[in-house]
Image (cartoon, rainbow, N blue to C red; front, side, top):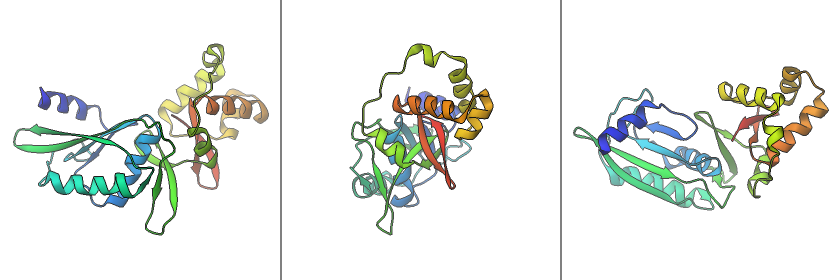
Length: 210
């Protein structure tokens, strides 16, 4: 049933493909989530759910959808298609918004100053993509050799990124005890295959799971 499915979804907690909002404060803020989902693996936005998973419900579906549609149509370039579902927990109303992984990447989010930024979904956060990531999003992933994916060096990397938002080149080289040159080549191959993506972290670049 719809209510049971919703509770199971909420119990998963926020993550790479799920975000909770008690209400949509503004189109500007929610545009980042919509763009990040579309640029990464897609996702579900639940409106009427607190950060801790408590269902608070919404007062007006039309009002919430209006701000979401403004974000999807006017603040994302290109616009993002969405699917809506109405769900109920008792007498409380929750809006479920599905965002598919896009075939028109990258989607740029326009800010009030007129500037545009590409965001990616990393764990439960929306983070700015590096210029390198923007370029790779435009192309089909290059096949990555299965032997490479199963190698100890890559397994260590993927395991690390399961519990950490990102890793730098220097940290990765030290983690697996190889030169930065070799580590950079391995990271580049995984970026090309879209197994990982470059993200902007302070003044440098980090690498996160796609």
